Image (spheres, rainbow, N blue to C red):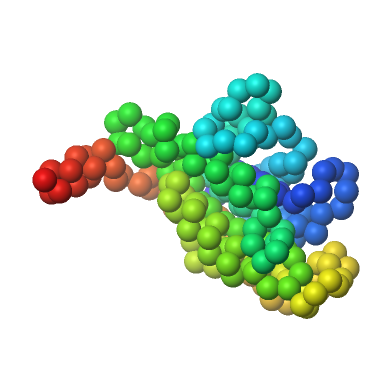
Length: 216
């Protein structure tokens, strides 16, 4: 797998060492990547001082650049988040906003954003509904900032409606979650290996110039 690396941004609202349901599902993906010879790094975002903003460095003690540096050094980026009020949690929203800072750091020759050539995926846990909404929005956002999305690049578990047992309590035996986390790991690994050997050649700057000409 060409020494591929995966990074998981755990967007739980719980600081370490509090147990995280999202982390429990992340670890299953980590195990699958290990079988494939892929090194994984898991970052719990709330353990860092991540400022609100839409750039790669907001200054004043912002620790996002430490995280972003590791994102750029990875081949696979997995955004993992709990569901709150039916949508992705506030930490995940902040992470997506910070990742959008890459728009201003495009390759000077091709115009490609920094996450071009990386494979995106999404992991979700929570009670009640919302997993489809969270995955669809997050995966869509990842494509817009340059990531490639492989088939079946999401894995989730949700409990019954209303307050109730969590993933750590009753969800780890879910056939669906255990199946989809394997789909996610194997398909993202294959896609990342493909991209490492066949970089995307698209020159966005040339296409933008062509679009401006066609729009006159």
